[in-house]
Length: 242
Length: 328
Image (cartoon, rainbow over all chains, first blue to last red; front, top):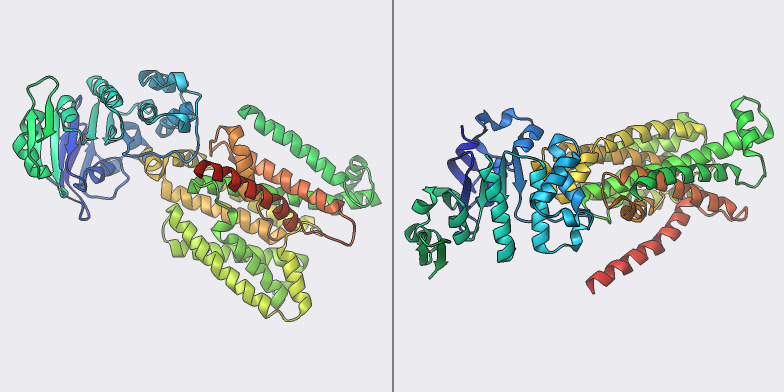
């Protein structure tokens, strides 16, 4: 059974007739130029954007879930997060338990250990570097024990060390029987970590399929209007603008 | 420290309550005055404590609690430490409602409670206008609507003052607007307490939403929190709290703005943990200010709202100064 399936999903003029599925254990990459509708697509899946069409989570229609039930299944990691207050790291991670209505200490601590943020659990979030914060945001999502993580450009503002670290954590998550839907700009990392790719342009899917078939010089050149060097056979795969 | 905040504030509240009962132009024993009053023994000290100081103290505590709680709730809802209870528009609505009593002599059947009843009615009308104008629970839009209705009510209030039938009516209205809890009776409390209870319950049911909103509306919504509905409940709760407080005591400035600021570091900046302590500290501050007002020489009455503003404004200046260092 698909973790998530979308049929004929449309969001006013930003997305039209999107149909796709997310399988258990995979990382599905969403790639497209700015304004293609990647964030809108991901927001629809987590219930913060109104849409027409159909979304199913674990075979059940989206609207049949209560918001908290849905939030227990799908965790959302948005593009930018600003904490209004200088909260302690462990309090931010504890917010991940909101859909469950508890502050389960063991699960919060497990999420902090998994993302290696336990050592600064008592520090204020405002004192951390961008990379450390990225791990805290991910810990918050892990603390909610979702089946699926929907991540919107989670590595766009990170240095390469933290980019790899975050992607490795998402990989481990998917390998443990969960799934990830991620919008990503770094094509080489997309090729390295995603099993399947969806190419999005002006709110429409122009290609979908296994990474090696989708991320080709031809499709990417067409999508980004720029010549692209594509070597998916090297380890790690390399995709660069010419 | 976080665990100690609430118990410490409760202890301090009881001390302030006792000091307030003991403070006044006549020296009386609080214990025997209270016991006499509770036992329906109408001695002089029972009348002073039970009929004059107790209502005044309880009203000061209730008004302060309402303002402190609504300040903390609104700052959490708007994710803005500068949000003030007057933003929800209920404050000006209540002031305008009360002004109609001084101007038109409405609600005379309610006697001394006329201003309170009219103020509460004004707050309720303002609230309905705000909700109708906003048409959504999105916090930013509700607050914009609140500001718009507040400005409108303020303009009408200025017109009422402009056309006051006589200088005495105008003076009475201006004095009332300056804020005070003196010469209030237990009847005022019978209106204030249910409003305080309902408003507080509405706000406190939304603790999780306030916590979730720390990371933004979209994350809160993605975590299954009902942002629109919850925001409406918070606005309704704070409007009831502020409206009833203003209708009983007039405008008491700066309490709702400053109290959450003072407490935030002691509750690890958590908006959900800030609510009850803010109510307690608001109650303490307004009661202490009222004790100070009573300490002034007789005949030169300083209004409570003026004193809280005189204390609060320099503190606000300090906050801006502190904030300035981060930017320059």
